[in-house]
Length: 132
Image (cartoon, rainbow, N blue to C red; front, side, top):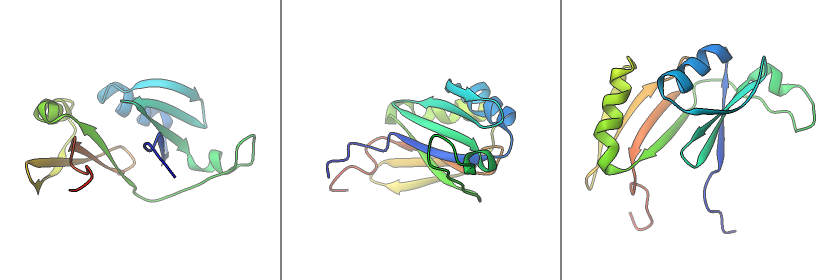
Protein backbone atom coordinates (compact mmCIF):
# COMPACT_ATOMS: atom_id res chain seq x y z
CA UNK A 1 0.00 0.00 0.00
CA UNK A 2 1.15 3.52 -0.71
CA UNK A 3 -0.83 5.60 1.78
CA UNK A 4 -0.03 9.29 1.47
CA UNK A 5 -1.57 10.49 4.73
CA UNK A 6 -4.61 10.33 6.97
CA UNK A 7 -7.08 12.55 5.11
CA UNK A 8 -9.66 12.81 7.83
CA UNK A 9 -10.14 11.82 11.41
CA UNK A 10 -13.24 11.73 13.55
CA UNK A 11 -14.14 12.81 17.05
CA UNK A 12 -17.44 12.01 18.73
CA UNK A 13 -18.82 15.03 20.56
CA UNK A 14 -21.76 15.81 22.81
CA UNK A 15 -22.73 19.32 21.68
CA UNK A 16 -22.27 20.64 18.13
CA UNK A 17 -22.67 24.29 19.19
CA UNK A 18 -19.84 23.99 21.74
CA UNK A 19 -17.75 22.08 19.21
CA UNK A 20 -18.30 24.79 16.58
CA UNK A 21 -17.54 27.56 19.07
CA UNK A 22 -14.26 25.85 19.95
CA UNK A 23 -12.91 24.67 16.59
CA UNK A 24 -14.31 27.47 14.42
CA UNK A 25 -14.63 30.28 16.94
CA UNK A 26 -11.45 29.79 18.95
CA UNK A 27 -9.14 27.74 16.71
CA UNK A 28 -10.42 29.41 13.50
CA UNK A 29 -10.90 26.16 11.55
CA UNK A 30 -13.17 26.67 8.54
CA UNK A 31 -16.51 24.84 8.64
CA UNK A 32 -16.81 22.75 5.46
CA UNK A 33 -19.96 20.76 6.25
CA UNK A 34 -22.70 20.77 8.84
CA UNK A 35 -25.90 18.84 9.49
CA UNK A 36 -27.71 20.08 12.62
CA UNK A 37 -28.06 17.38 15.25
CA UNK A 38 -25.65 15.05 13.45
CA UNK A 39 -22.23 16.45 12.52
CA UNK A 40 -19.93 19.35 11.72
CA UNK A 41 -16.79 19.07 9.59
CA UNK A 42 -13.76 21.38 9.73
CA UNK A 43 -10.78 22.03 7.48
CA UNK A 44 -7.54 21.47 9.42
CA UNK A 45 -4.74 22.38 7.01
CA UNK A 46 -4.92 19.80 4.23
CA UNK A 47 -6.90 17.40 6.45
CA UNK A 48 -10.50 17.23 7.59
CA UNK A 49 -11.71 16.94 11.17
CA UNK A 50 -15.10 15.23 11.38
CA UNK A 51 -17.11 15.80 14.56
CA UNK A 52 -20.20 13.63 14.99
CA UNK A 53 -22.84 13.32 17.64
CA UNK A 54 -22.11 9.68 18.47
CA UNK A 55 -25.70 8.46 18.70
CA UNK A 56 -26.67 10.14 15.42
CA UNK A 57 -23.73 8.58 13.54
CA UNK A 58 -24.56 5.19 15.02
CA UNK A 59 -27.87 5.04 13.14
CA UNK A 60 -27.88 3.25 9.77
CA UNK A 61 -28.08 5.53 6.74
CA UNK A 62 -26.39 6.03 3.40
CA UNK A 63 -22.97 5.42 5.03
CA UNK A 64 -21.95 2.66 7.44
CA UNK A 65 -22.93 3.44 11.03
CA UNK A 66 -20.07 4.22 13.41
CA UNK A 67 -19.76 5.15 17.03
CA UNK A 68 -17.17 5.93 19.63
CA UNK A 69 -16.83 7.22 23.14
CA UNK A 70 -14.20 8.35 25.55
CA UNK A 71 -11.43 10.90 25.42
CA UNK A 72 -9.50 10.56 22.16
CA UNK A 73 -6.21 12.10 21.04
CA UNK A 74 -5.10 13.78 17.85
CA UNK A 75 -2.24 16.07 16.89
CA UNK A 76 -2.08 19.07 14.59
CA UNK A 77 1.20 19.78 12.82
CA UNK A 78 2.67 23.28 12.43
CA UNK A 79 5.99 24.46 11.05
CA UNK A 80 8.80 24.92 13.54
CA UNK A 81 8.73 28.63 12.69
CA UNK A 82 5.02 28.89 13.60
CA UNK A 83 5.12 26.74 16.74
CA UNK A 84 5.57 29.58 19.28
CA UNK A 85 2.96 31.75 17.52
CA UNK A 86 0.49 28.86 17.49
CA UNK A 87 1.05 28.26 21.20
CA UNK A 88 0.51 31.96 21.91
CA UNK A 89 -2.69 31.94 19.80
CA UNK A 90 -4.06 29.01 21.83
CA UNK A 91 -3.23 30.73 25.11
CA UNK A 92 -4.68 34.06 23.92
CA UNK A 93 -7.92 32.24 23.02
CA UNK A 94 -8.18 31.31 26.71
CA UNK A 95 -7.45 27.63 26.14
CA UNK A 96 -5.30 26.19 28.94
CA UNK A 97 -2.19 24.31 27.86
CA UNK A 98 -1.83 21.19 29.99
CA UNK A 99 1.75 20.37 29.18
CA UNK A 100 4.59 21.05 26.78
CA UNK A 101 6.94 18.21 25.94
CA UNK A 102 10.47 18.18 24.54
CA UNK A 103 10.80 15.17 22.22
CA UNK A 104 14.52 15.77 21.68
CA UNK A 105 16.24 16.69 18.46
CA UNK A 106 14.74 20.20 18.60
CA UNK A 107 11.12 19.02 18.49
CA UNK A 108 8.46 20.28 20.88
CA UNK A 109 4.74 19.74 21.28
CA UNK A 110 2.03 20.98 23.62
CA UNK A 111 -1.28 19.56 24.77
CA UNK A 112 -4.72 21.06 25.43
CA UNK A 113 -8.34 19.85 25.51
CA UNK A 114 -11.53 20.54 23.59
CA UNK A 115 -15.00 20.88 25.21
CA UNK A 116 -15.41 17.05 25.23
CA UNK A 117 -12.02 16.59 26.92
CA UNK A 118 -10.39 15.12 23.81
CA UNK A 119 -6.63 15.58 24.14
CA UNK A 120 -5.33 17.78 21.34
CA UNK A 121 -1.66 18.28 20.57
CA UNK A 122 0.30 20.68 18.40
CA UNK A 123 3.55 19.20 17.07
CA UNK A 124 6.42 20.66 15.07
CA UNK A 125 6.66 19.42 11.50
CA UNK A 126 9.33 16.83 10.85
CA UNK A 127 8.86 15.16 14.22
CA UNK A 128 7.83 11.79 12.81
CA UNK A 129 9.79 11.88 9.56
CA UNK A 130 11.30 8.63 8.34
CA UNK A 131 14.56 7.70 9.98
CA UNK A 132 13.67 9.52 13.15
